[in-house]
Image (cartoon, rainbow, N blue to C red; front, top):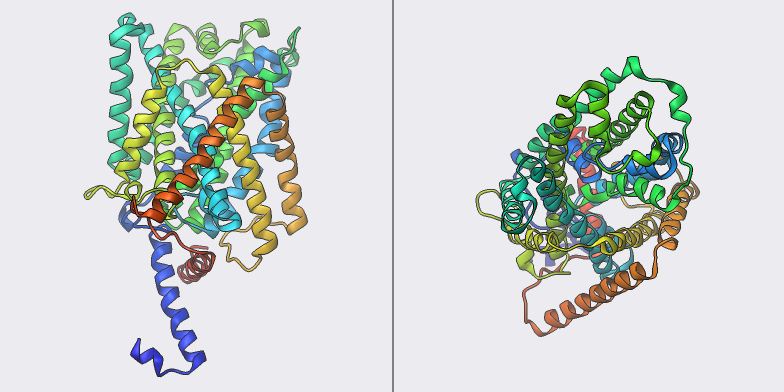
Length: 493
């Protein structure tokens, strides 16, 4: 400080900027806030691809209602077209903002930098509740599949024990680190997709293209569009772990492109094979019909394999959802939106163990509820979050054109607006067709989120709990600039 006092004004400013850049570079290396995983334990390309795959889909399981609600023709068209009007725009926005601000917390960090802490906190509420409800379905689903093999697990104490064991085991897996979770996702992804590759091959001589033109006698467009939306969303979930990714400037965009391609083909090819090879009415295409179709095409052995694959897919889906939600809490704690304890990392594995335990406990509690309307509300809250996310993307393009972006969507501001228009219109449509119960539940969660924000502010003002300082826009810009310079020197951008 004494040395800086003897420098001229410009030199002092330069020295200060240099020190700020060094601090920002350290923050960028560490995930943009708080300590990140050690360099040797960061996520590389292949496990990141499969983590994104499980955050979004986990395979074609659950796509059957699209055929049931509208018929093979509309289901095939939906899964062919919808990735371009929804998945690709969301993935592009995620790639640009994640590499511009490569910190844990993802979309919460973006909204905070664009519109302030209230918007960041509200974004966190909407996305976290949506993700937690989404994740809560998987332990119960896994117990349901297990009950087909072990009937005793179908109810009572054994079912509760199975759900708790599933939750605890995967929480421990997440505790051991994202690299372990990522490579486990690779194995689970290969195992859950393999039976569909066999089914598609076995179906080739039995396919009759005319069957692809079938339509349902009575179409349920609400179910159809909700099925497409449910099976192709959450591309931005990976952003909450951006601070744990190796060379995010190159790795994140590549992983998103690969995951979008793999997910889209993972739906389209099995649907083409099954609808073309099996001559059944659309009404028969309920949840789980892929296993029945596989049995008709190749025999019972393939039916059982797909049912086992469904269990493995549920494991991967839950594990990826838990990781994303836990690192979101860590990012919110780094920003000062939640108490600092949520940013605490385990001494050996360097994972956010408090956030993992908290998320695991919340999803476990929700696993025992019947919550059809709450699941619909989760879609509604997710839609609110995505509208805020698209607004953040446009706002930062307009107001912060100088923000370094290692990956930039190849479009000027009007093109960026156009990119967000179609998916935003679809989000408004999904929200408009929701019922009054969904509106009421969503309003209650939103009000709770507003209450949490002001409660945290009160606790921070009175010193009841310990909070991180968070950061400001200048610090975020410095971190991004330092990150870009580092990436340019090493060839990462």
